[in-house]
Image (tube, rainbow, N blue to C red):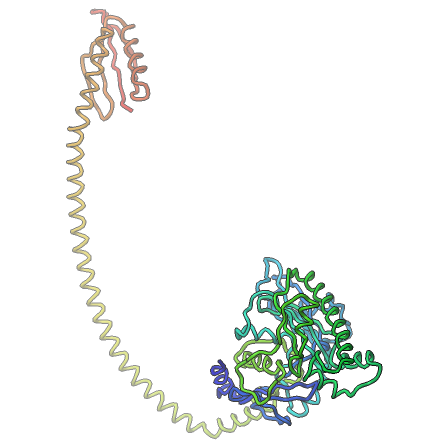
Length: 514
């Protein structure tokens, strides 16, 4: 599973040989190398180590902040910091460490949503400066609950539904919620192991040995064989889970959660026997141990889950991804990026340039001659190629001219045949139709005692030279035609005149077929 990651870790361009995971609160250290997580007793400085740690939930706050989509990338950091100060009521006199990561799938047309993590620099200094003195730098300090998302990214759990995590540490405890494999919410709880111990002694009425108490929790859990202790633990953890239930009620309302599908409980020293039964009883949620197989070799029966999760996150960061990072202890810039380094490099380059100028001139002259000879050969080859291409273009132009001439001849032949066919069609179709129309007009004229002396045909217009002994007959005939052939023909007659010698009325009627 981690073969590709190990290859990346050992890549010469990156130069990292180990990932060193540090619990700065308990001074517990592990190193990840050759897919094995090995505990180490002492820290040593090695620039080839990629050094990581985690910040407990009690030492930072997290919230969701919305920013307009119109904020340009170069102004995003400032906009989020200003919004965090306003929304979270931060002290304006303190320059907090503010880190953020965008929430996938919540971007709208107007707003972008971000998880924002805020810590005080003094707290980070106090917790991690002793570590920094030993290793000189810390590459990443992660907000602890955020790392749980690696369980989903590595397909250890299915990223579906809402999952809750309850985790106890000696100096802290937290509740975290994840929805569909993405970080949603986390809160530090007042019930650390130290606080649980103090509350237990209060219920017992006297102090018990602290180490013996922690051993009891680790080995017997909440089902100890000491009946007096059993009663105190039952009352104490009933209080704890009622407190957790109140927080879950708030979170469900704040984040519109219908139900929590699964719950996981654990601690930095291992699963606590009986804790899942309490979670199921008081929260009504199916619960399992927060203890997963990350496919890394280990030399102990149990390793704090966040050493595994920190290593997984570090592998992503080495490969180029970005995570929320609270570190103030960065690596020194590369030698070439320092002012002293730039000065030394510039001085050395000047000396080398002054000493090597004759060699440079000779080398450059030789280079120019070789390049010139090469270019002449290339020019000769290109000239030959150009002549060949020009000859080919001339041949193609000639072929094009011949083809265009043939196309013109074919078009002329086509137009000639087209006209012949049109003439044939006119004689075979239009003439009979025109003849039929004239016959029909003749039948109509006989009804009104109107006769025709001449018929002229031009396109779709007939000119009929009419005569009759009655002007009224001609008028009636024209009206008849107009009514009978409405919307099929158009009639027009300039005038009807009378021949005084013969007493016959004449007129030229134009009939246009529509």
